[in-house]
Image (cartoon, rainbow, N blue to C red; front, side, top):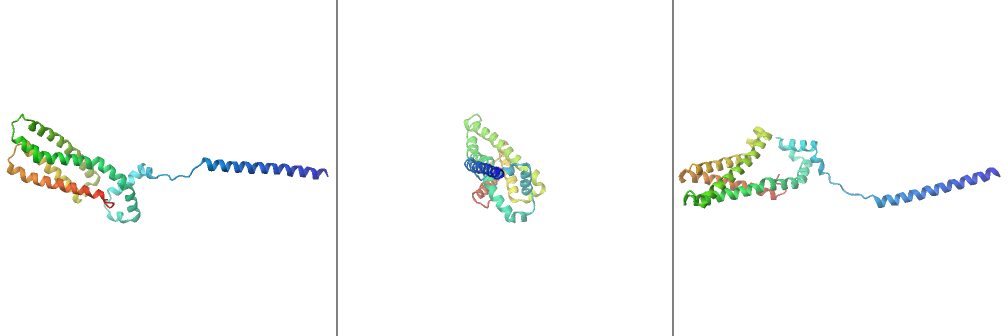
Length: 215
């Protein structure tokens, strides 16, 4: 009888412990559900890491066009394009628009008005001010092309739009040089016409950014 009572007491104690453990488990589950949330975390930070930058730079300078036919690479570029497009608009397209407007205004209007007044007139001062600003933009775009030449090396000159960039900058420098040397209109107009044409051509090139397949 004593052993039976002891076993009953032990069983009762074990049940109490089990009930206590069950209550603790349920409480923990409820608190866990209330405390923790499941969220989708963006993974684009991966591309800001060293390995990600190396991977993207390797694709940028790759001479193998077949790489960009791989479906996974296409999806990756489509995902990243919205970020790169914003950077291109702010860092290249906006400066080019300002440069474009200044150059066209200067070469087709301000410079002509300067020729009609004396050397100290307001249009003469404005003319030289615009020349210095345009030269600043030329150095800015030359810096961009220099970085592209370093990255692509000889392959740079095999890309049509790179040649357009170089020719456009060279023609604009020629126009400014002819104006500063006060060359005759006979020599200036053909060069200006070509320079203006290439500026408009570059502007049309930027229009590709409105398409998903711009890359």
